[in-house]
Image (tube, rainbow, N blue to C red; front, side, top):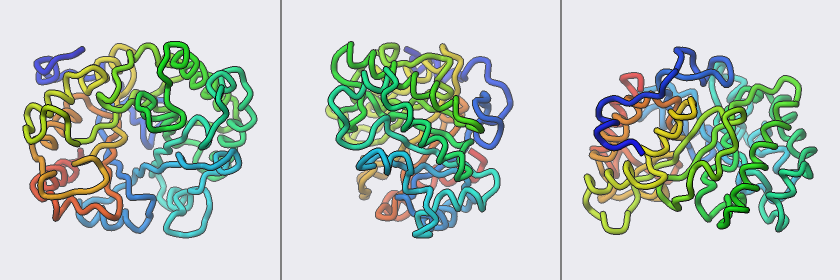
Amino acid sequence: MVGVAAVAAGGVVAGMAASSLLGGHPRSRVAGSRTCVYTGESVGQLAKVDRLLGADLRCVVVFNTQAPGWSAWEHPWFLDPTPSDAAWAVWRRDHHGATLVLTVPLVPAAPERDWRVAGASGRYDAHVRALVGNLVAAGLGQCVVRLGAEMNGTWNVDQAGSSVQDQGQWAAYWRHFVQVARSVPHEHLTFDWTVDSVVRPIPLNSIYPGDDVVDVVGIDQYDGDVTGHLGDAAARWAFFLNSPDGLAEVAAFSRSHGKPLSVPEWGLGDGSRLSAEDDDPYFVAHLVDWFRRWRVAYEGFWFPPRIEPDTATPRAWSLYRDFVREGG
């Protein structure tokens, strides 16, 4: 684990070339960061975010985590041209150089009981090829795919499981998935392996699929209440930074594997609501400094329609706005 002193000294991912991951050739290494946003799946909401930030963002995070069956999983909702406020494939086509970060589960909702074993053994290969083929046909063959994101949590159907055996099978399926995906013609996806910060300290190596299939190592980080650190911004930040599976450990893990680092989701509060008590400039100041020091490939602020960070959390929002206007 990398401590506070090492981060403060300016730890950056070793071996990073100057090429860009987002907007450059897929699977390239990274120097510099890029601002992304989650807008509650609304194309129109992006204009509001741009206005409040004084920026023209070209990177959006979307989810297909509620696909009820294989058909909806193979053909995600964001590929459809209607309704226009959810037509992200159209948005991507109309904005040359823009990036979609696609959050894709390993299986649809309500999977069969042995889905990890089934996936690793090739039982789902036809579904994987269909999904990737549909992405390529829609012009999304060069997007970032967060595959099985937040697997160390317990809330997603495609989580890594509780036993060492489950976790090994999960990693084997993730690995096999990418190998099958890369067999699809004209596929140039970038695969992001994203953990959630300090929720369940699963050893990272036990769920890591391998350097040859992982392109980016990511971590999601929210400034929610933490038991024992409520109301103490400095202690809360130190907890996020130094706990097992926290920011410092994941950053060091990415460096040890020669992978770019991302923060695909982050936000004030718990990401579902905002109030004045969530106005935490300490968290934002330290997080954006961490972005700079570790030269993250991209970071995704959580800004769905029901959240108003500019009015509910003006001090924290002002710091982030300045960071974005400075070019991230």
